[in-house]
Image (cartoon, rainbow, N blue to C red; front, side):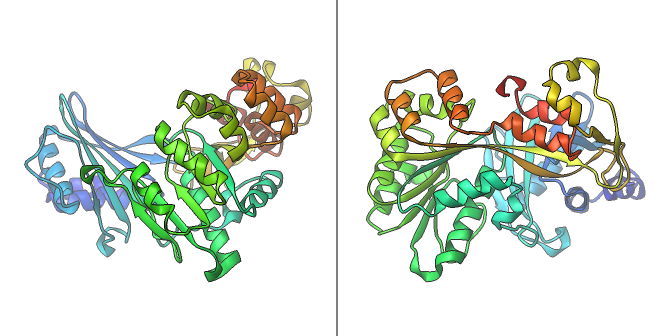
Length: 403
């Protein structure tokens, strides 16, 4: 029984809301959750936590608690408590009584009331070491080589929550460890998620018209050697990032794209000239996070025939198929921690020529594979072969046609 359920039983249905909210947060922290979703449904308030990227139910509360829970969280994040018709975002500082974690609180109005999502940041357990990212040796070697370059644009792509920001923070941490005070690093983010040592971090503020383009133009006069941009969202930001990569800066950023090779089409759609892309871009890393089998309850299993039928025969012949049965340690999920799948596209002359010719994404993907790029699917199958995860988990995150 979790703390929330235990406290509700003890309170006889009339809990102190501050204590109830505290129990919800502590339960999420104890479970190792990254987010808490508090959402009014038809007949109850559903409280769910995101464990290793997947939502699971924590508790259901009476609907009449919603207004008081929302009010308490707004006070914690210094938001406008009486405003219920507009989205709001804020932060609650670390509190020892709540597990010492920082909370980023987002309130969103719905037809049933306000939905609240709480992102949990635990500064004590956060490591930004490259070795902790879970990259395979080949991808890590290429990533470190790109970080050693004096200039160029490096992009990371993947869905929300795929580890892009953690990878960039780890890269910056690596550069400060390697170069000490002999390197100038600046970032522009929305928002700044963690304060990093020896790095100048800036947070955009649209309410004051402090945008990515404005920040980057000013930053170019600050004499940085390395620039990290939280996300490239528009053509103006993309244009400045490309120019910075061409003028002696190492630039890192993220960009949303359906695939790693699809980044080129995304930049061209932002009206960046192909010759600028091919000249500035040095590499693109596609990222996904997958759950690994719980080491305490993993056991051999046989995937469904339909799943096996779609796999290459050479993989089926050698794979050690294993799956977690579910235990108290993994909260019955069968999975432990998460690890990274990577797809590292390195720009070379062949790819540069293909980009200049505006070849379609599928063709660019084929060329990259021909030049030695290991796909996300191949990276996932390597994990399956060694029994670290399940076939189904890889297919949940990666399309099979990438093989």
